[in-house]
Figure 1 (cartoon, rainbow, N blue to C red):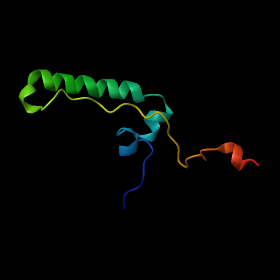
Figure 2 (figure 1 turned 45 degrees about the vertical axis):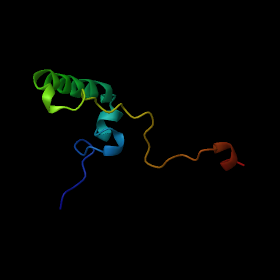
Figure 3 (figure 1 turned 90 degrees about the vertical axis):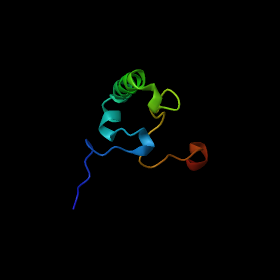
Figure 4 (figure 1 turned 120 degrees about the vertical axis):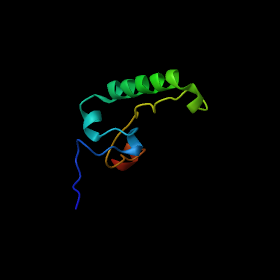
Length: 76
């Protein structure tokens, strides 16, 4: 049985990053490195692509349990 790893499992909901990458502030560096690889692949073989490839942007918000939209209503 496989075990979950905070350091290994990449989530589609967070741009194929691991929770650890986000927690440690590595998301933008990882995404920039991915884009460099995509740019190189496109430069070498543009015929393989319908358009220039782009990386997913880093997520703006990340949480395990989404906080309520209106916290004022929940505190009364």
